[in-house]
Image 1 (tube, one colour):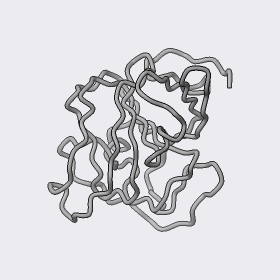
Image 2 (cartoon, one colour):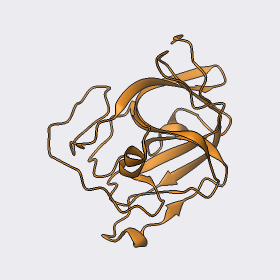
Image 3 (cartoon, helix red, strand yellow):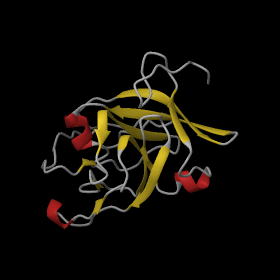
Image 4 (tube, one colour):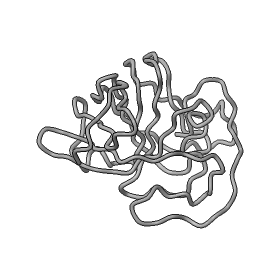
Length: 179
């Protein structure tokens, strides 16, 4: 998804630069808008999966998201953080997003409440792209490559925890540096 579908037209701030590679988020399209990154732990029962997430914390970052990226590293994602709960109707979309994604909608305690599969929108017109509403209120949303959650056996009820103490989890509480 490029960002939350909220009436904003797409932001076209792109430049071509070389990709990062490795476990870092891939920036094939060289998005000019900068995103901080943080390690994220995904917890399902006794299993923990780690990834490095770009953090979309501001409205301009929410709107841009992963638009125009040619690829996303296997152990990378984008975590959309909000200062207040978002309504169940606050949908994401795939306008100008080139890669299929899965998205987990997370409550204020870091618990996954819904997961949706999203496919690239082939139209040149934003109005022609479908929306992907979560049908639950959420405080954060995590986008990863399509199939990631199923491959790692993560589903509704799993947890998402930011792994660095300089940030807060989606509930706004400090998290320990246990990784």
